[in-house]
Length: 199
Image: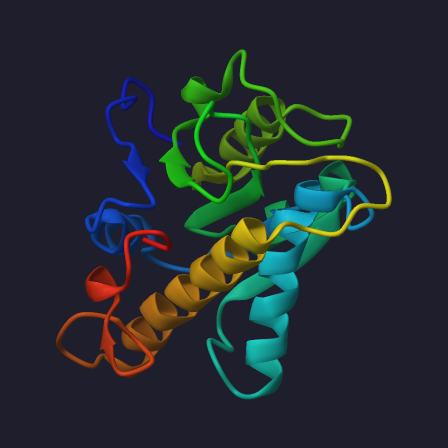
């Protein structure tokens, strides 16, 4: 969490997003995916977490702590504070007034007044608690949802965005773990060269 850092914001079409995330992911890190898996695009944070957990099952980004909190992120605050991470990323559906699937790195102070998903505790409250208890750099990867109807399936844009965010985080962490020089890659080419609809 950075006070007074509201200008640090990157949309999915901005190729600087990988660099911004790489700079913020120092030390140990926790990714908490938030969202109701039964409410359409609100499930996107949970989807990102499940994709990362599946990648870890295949041997990827094994040192990254991943939590699929679904709609009860407050239930996982205790375990996170015990880890004393250097960074905590909250991945959630956030209404930014953008096209569905748009991804943005948001500071906690930017969250005031933004519509979020179905969990009870506001993201800003969760983030301030984690920052106060751990001193971690806490920020949000917000993904613009479309439909939030109960029982609906996620939209294609949200499915693409969830895969893109999970692959980006996995690639950054793999690069960090392996200390491989050069840009983090996704499917063999630099992330910044992916099509604009994803990045």
